[in-house]
Amino acid sequence: MKPKFEEISTSTVREVIELLSPAADDYLYVYDFAQDYYYISPHARQRFLMEDNAFHNVAENLKRMVYPEDFPKLRADLDGILTTNRCTHNLTYRLLSAEEKPVWINCRGTVVRDAAEKPLYMVGCINEIGKDQKADNRSGLLGAASLKTYLSQYKDAFPDGFVLRIGLDGLKGVNARLGIEYGDLVLEKTSEFISECLLPGETLYHVVGDEFLVVDFEGRNTALGKDLYRHVRDKIRDFIMEKNYEVLFTISGGMLDCRDIDEPSYSRVMKYTEFALNEAKRLGKNTCYLYMPEDYGKFLRRRKLNLHLRQAINNQFEGFEAYYQPLFSADKHRLIGAEALMRFHCEEFGMVSPGEFIPILEETFLIVPAGRWIMHEALKMCREVQKYIPDFKISINISHVQILRSSIGREILAAIDQYGIDPKYVTIELTESGLLETDQRFTTLWSHLKEAGITLALDDFGTGYSNFHYFTDLQPDIVKIDRSFAAKAATDEFEFEILSLFSKMIHELNLKVCVEGVETAAELEKLCQLPPEYLQGFFLGRPCPKTQFIEQFVQN
Ligand code: C2E
Ligand code: CA
Ligand code: CA
Image (cartoon, rainbow, N blue to C red; front, top):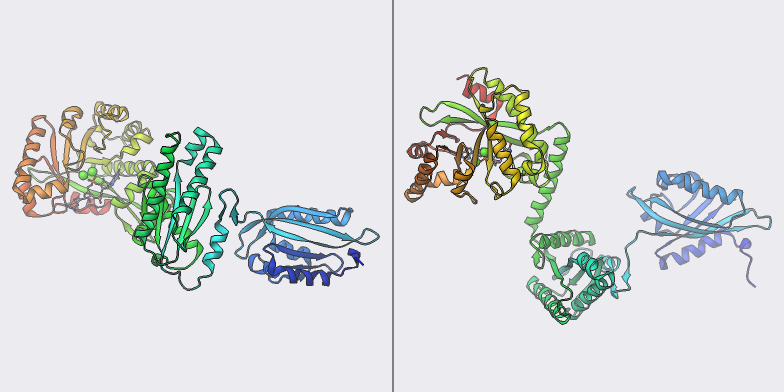
């Protein structure tokens, strides 16, 4: 005879839960109202913030394991069970994980009442709603959760082999142009092609939206992994041709040698392959990148440095410093002025070179506030030094990003005005970036500054982009010869001939030459034969902080 539910004791329910728990991912529970007692599947103890999976004082204990913001909602729902004759509980809220992170769950329960409708207990189930998909029924492949289970059987190390993460390039575009159904077809076909290319023992997972992951624990090397990637690519190419180019898409691959996985865990595999796939995409997509620990190390350093730079800027530029390198006249070696150079140091990395942090500032547009900061520092310094040397000139480097992303022209003029400096004592240094003569923002700024009487210097001549017609088109006041060019010219007669020719042409246009990076007496002697108007270099003076600069170069 079927027992009435109210005749089943909570200790029996508890035994049933204990029995079922090993077979269920979800958490089963019973809440005995009369005894104020709660019991939940034992494996909840590892997942959630609870000392024991059985406890009295339920409200108080729940309060500790529920995400604080969600507790009032749960409390109200439970009170409703006690004050009305409602028999169901169905609530979505957050519990705290053992690591005290919020975990979204759905909690459902059935309330068992006695003949007088008094609630006896509630029995039900908690399931995590944000949990990874175990399988993808559309592609017919296993999902991330299954990959996790597969990898978790290896405790000490993964076997030799490779992991290849494949991502579709431009699925969004396919969806937008041909519709979601077509996008689904492309995904389906890709997973089909990968499956067809697998060798015995290799397993395939559909990890996220447009990404697949192949695991080879059969000892095959990454060269074979790259073959796999190429085979899939060939199949895709044939498919595109078969469809008469109605659809165009490519795949990128992130390859990982199992020997490079320093800790055998799912999270490492995902982290490294994600990095590798991103690198492949960054390299222009439709290519496969092999994970290198050094590259990943550099990436992490860059990411951390980015964070430190951002924090420093938000923290009144703490860690930033302006250094000044003296600039001399070439004829009498008289101090003419200084170039302001940015420095950055932080606890984690110590002093970081501008060659490393300036590109990060540019990429993140943080060069806009940082460039503004050093401009003000430099102008303040200039005014201070002018007390000793009234015609002292200050040179400030401006990045092309500042030109594209801020109203730098107006800012420079306003700041010069604010410090009461004559514009002719300010030099703005710009590097040819390929935009200088074609982009209107550059040409406008250039003529604007020129009109205001500011000196313009074309920096880094002799590297990359330099081209002689910039001199005629842009008419800078000064051309700065980069150290790489100058150093070669100092020792190589042929290079010296080239540099002298340039120097002659520059002088014929009535522009001035500054030689940068003079490191030795021999270099100085040779390069003075050009002859340049200005000199800069470690041999004459290294960049240093303002007080040292004043002591060393101004007061002496
Ligand atoms: P740059 O504008 O060409 O600056 C000259 C660089 O040459 C400086 O490097 C200076 O320390 C270095 N140098 C000077 N004399 C010698 C020498 O005799 N030998 C050698 N080997 N090097 C010498 P630094 O300070 O490391 O700056 C590197 C680059 O970072 C700068 O090259 C510039 O492009 C950028 N940078 C530095 N400060 C700023 C800034 O405030 N704003 C912007 N936008 N860029 C900056
Ligand atoms: Ca410069
Ligand atoms: Ca330079």
